[in-house]
Length: 324
Image 1 (cartoon, rainbow, N blue to C red):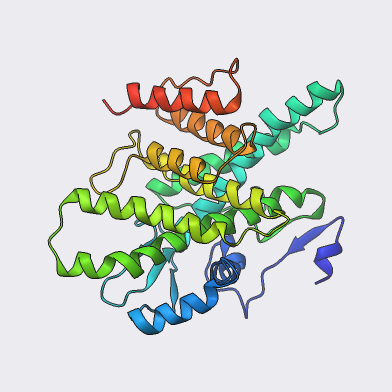
Image 2: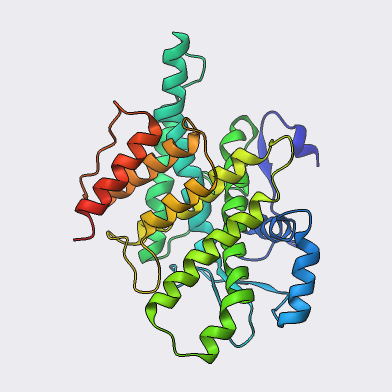
């Protein structure tokens, strides 16, 4: 555990005996399971009881393989087990790192430096360029697979201690994003699978199931916020990034069996009871701006408005302009 106090030089977390898979995200597989099991103080007991009563699989299955993303996280009806593709997990970490790092370098640090009238936080062009390159890599995984270059691009397996904040903070947001995803699938397993299997349902039922799964997942997670709220912001940022990761698959936000993605984002941020100046509004705005640039949607971040109002303005633009 000497790496915890390491201040310079390479940190390499990979241990062949413990880490399975080919992609650098393998070093966090055990952590996402642990974080999920400890969603809140009572959840481990609830999970054990639910597994016994509902016949849900104990196993969270990671589908290994060097291929493009073919499925986002899901539950199989036959074994009632949650499945996560290794490439999707790589994609999610890359989204968490790149959006958060771009937000720091382009939005947050300049804002604070302007306030203090000097460079309190270093603007680093190389860090920003690598974050942009990782964002391009993440989007590429949607259409094809390419090996994650651990020597050149940020990753959770091998990195320099001097830049550890740009890896370990995204690690935290990534595990929180996964917690939200796994809790969402858990709610499906508890409340929806039987009805889906036993009844022929209209698409509107599926949309309601998705809304309920989002809402109940966030309620489970909120119960895990410490009394001193020291973990509240990482949880909020993780959920924000988790939902933002859903945007980059296509130019529209509509779905047949899912609510509009922007509606899911709005509902989640409102449910989290964010302050008007929360970083989550700015991170959400940046994520939506990057999505707009990806698909040439002409979305505009109105910098004359405070971040919450600017977010609401951008959601209005999405409603008016992107779904035809």
